[in-house]
Every structure is written in structure tokens, then in C-alpha cells.
Length: 212
Image (cartoon, rainbow, N blue to C red; front, side, top):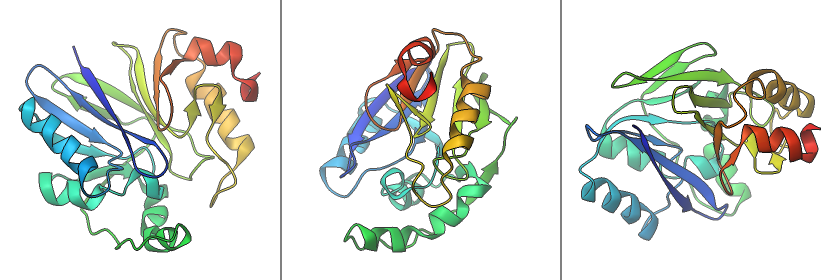
């Protein structure tokens, strides 16, 4: 049985997640922690639970989801897993920081690319990968079919969807991807989003005003 721990970090109230199992093996997803108390919160949780970080996963590479990426890579020394289409977004990190009045150094990490149809394995617990662009060109969703949950990044929120007015955003592409790839899943599939509260596929199919 996998456990999910969420943290809310940085100026954008971004959701960072740790997924872990009874063997204490874990994945760190979208490390948005900034220096100080936020990083300490992750370190404390990992230490107190004796976790071993096996992978660093990105749903996408917008600045609020990667502010702790260099720290995570340097600390845990495991590759960063992401879609190749978001590499250019990650490469723009320094320029993105300037737009927010922040000085952010470019990240230097080892990357493993994933694509639609790939599977990731955490001690036999398999996650399917869905490529759902529109918010960013390489946005992906990590779906655990057996336990019926997904980490959706900024693709789908409670009552909303990701912004499409950013670099290479595309509203129609995002809507089509959600309907074709996510809304075919079981209605009770939990959705752990990049911002805000968890929701479910069934709730969003019924109530999300963008997806009527």
C-alpha cells in the first residue's frame, strides 16, 4: 500500500509530493521547496520516516515546481524523470525567475526522459504515464491504476484546469487530453493536483465548468 505525503511550498502554493511504501522506498515529485523552512520540512519527513528517495519526478518544469530541484538532485543523487518536451521549459528557469523578480540559477541535473505509454515501477507498484500537454508542452500525469490515484501536476485541478496562456500553452489541446486520457478512468480515481485540494475524476466530470 503506497502512502502519499503532500507539502505546500513557495509563492504559488505549489503541491510537492512524496510517495512511499512499507520498504521505505520513495519518490519525490515536483520539489517546489525554497530554502529554509520548506526544505527543512522535506528533510525532516524523510528522516523521521527513514525514507530512501529512489526517483525525482517532474509533472512539468515550470518554476514553481522545480525551485527545489537542484537541492533534491544534489542531496539524493538520483536522476530527474521528466518528459523531453519540457526540457526547454527547464532550460528557461533563470529567465522565468527574472519575471518573478527572483534570482534562480540554472539547474544542472541528470535527466531520464519518459513518454506516453511508459511505466514506472516502485517495488512492483506500477504507474502509467500520460502525456497531457496544453499547460506546458511536456506535462505528464502519473497514474497508479490499482490504488486508483494520479499525480496530475497542473493538468487538472479541483474545479479548474491548468493555465494555457503560458509558453506553448494550448487550451484545446489540454481539454482534449483531459477528456481522452483522464476522463476514461474510474470515476473514483483520486486526483492529487499541483495546486489546491485533492479531487476525483468523477467529481470533475460532473462539476468542472471547463470540462462540461
